[in-house]
View 1 (cartoon, rainbow, N blue to C red):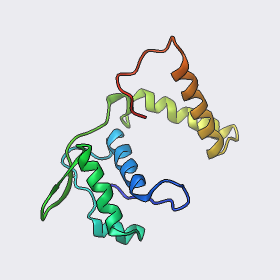
View 2 (cartoon, helix red, strand yellow):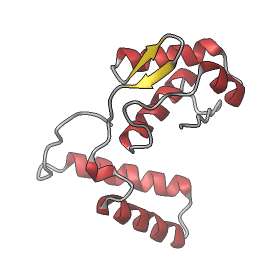
View 3 (cartoon, rainbow, N blue to C red):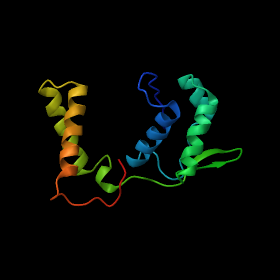
Amino acid sequence: MIEFQVDRHSGVATYLQLVNQVKQALRLGVLEPGDRLPTARAVVEATAINPNTVLKAYRELEREGLVEPRPGRGTFVTRSLSRPESAADSPLRADLVAWMRRARDAGLDRDEITALVEAARAEAESDPAAPARKDNTT
């Protein structure tokens, strides 16, 4: 089950942080169709946020077709966003983990690694020789 983390200093609305964390878990295969999301009460107890914030996030996920509420039973995942290339055991992920370790061993901190990844991503996306993506998700 997913455990939400709320960063009150991120500048991102709390409900969007929850939505983004569910989407990331769906992309990575942490959550799969049929999985139950934590109850609003459990999220409130773990994060000390307003219950309406949790409900707003869950409504947004429902609007996007990712979850469905089942009265008296909870909110359940209806579809996955994962692809084989991003699975925990994929060669691409293993290469990325190895690269991250090399970057850390080279003395880069988290912010420097993030900046380097974002710069490389922008460079790859602006390369006209790069193959086109099938979708426009980020």
